[in-house]
Image 1: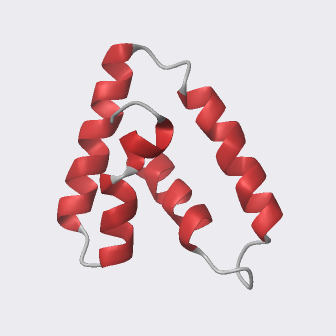
Image 2 (image 1 turned 30 degrees about the vertical axis):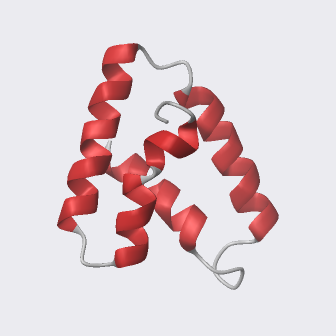
Length: 77
């Protein structure tokens, strides 16, 4: 789960010199669609992992990404 969240953060936060913006957006959308099929228990586990990663990182931008992950997925309000 950590690797998946790290990859999503990389795609979301990297500049266009690292990843083409359209390619990043397409991949984020495709993964988001797949994540929507997770069971409720798996979603809880993924969100808990994202919250732990937010607490562990020293990068404020990554922390914001991880903290907002559930909201961005439409799983939290």
